[in-house]
Length: 125
Image 1 (tube, rainbow, N blue to C red):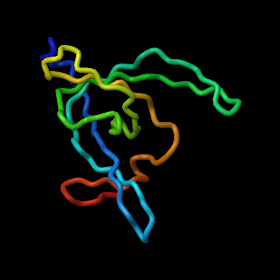
Image 2: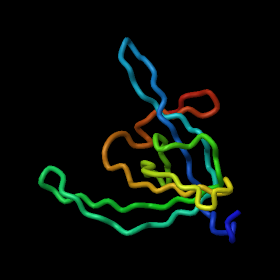
Image 3: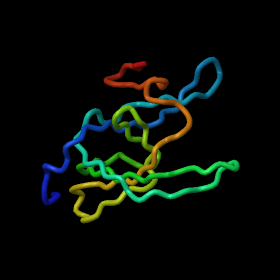
Image 4: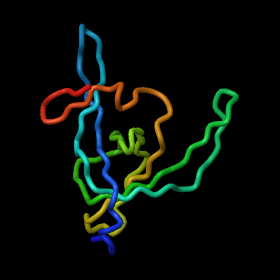
């Protein structure tokens, strides 16, 4: 276990994309895997990239949670109304106690209010 469980003092949601079909077209919806789990959110050092003749700033975020078995790099984290894409996952102690999720904020695409999210078998808007 982490040395100080009091550092897990933020609530986050973990969502995963689910493929579906509407009117013959493949669509993706977000399904909540874990709702309002305790986490620690720490900013990392930023980096700048050029993208289409514009400077794009990426600030990595380290989110620490208790170990969950079905979280992978295809999942996303929702915190304070922002979506963070998981870039890598680390189990630092290899004891399956905690997970460190290294994320960057999603700048484009759907927002949490724009996606349909499934909770308890229902799709929420």
